[in-house]
Image 1 (cartoon, rainbow, N blue to C red):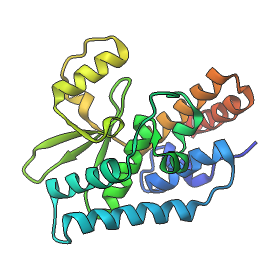
Image 2 (image 1 turned 90 degrees about the vertical axis):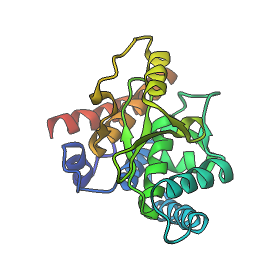
Image 3 (image 1 turned 45 degrees about the vertical axis):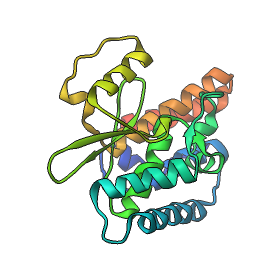
Length: 221
């Protein structure tokens, strides 16, 4: 059974400096298909970020950069949500999502966050009930939500509440905690839970047990 690295466990335990989000996402993918071409994935994220800068201009900031991220990832590269096989384990693996250009909301969000980080745009993840999106806060305190699963669509808070209601069936009050930036540890924990659920649905008990082992180790840490 593959064991998580000490740095990965440190991140899940709350040490946000233990590793970057893209590296942690690759650890999750390695649970599915073993040793990976990690550097190739990181190079592709770098390439997309350089294209974002080329589209936006080297001096661009804020909304201009955000629109450039959306243009490169969702218009040029055609990243999209996988609606045909939503619960496929591949949709939880960042390298496979990048290759197939489709995945889960959270995996697409991680890609968006990491490309934006390289381009100089700080994005956060937002852990909505039943859905996952990105958040950008500009210097004037204006907050913009982005839905990578739906082509980078820009959302209002009311849109977010509707998405959560569609996913869960529950009517949620517009409390600030719903839109709070998710720490990396929570993002990766949710990715592990998604992968566990994908294996369980497919009857791949051995893989489900392996992911559950990682989740237990993280809880103990």
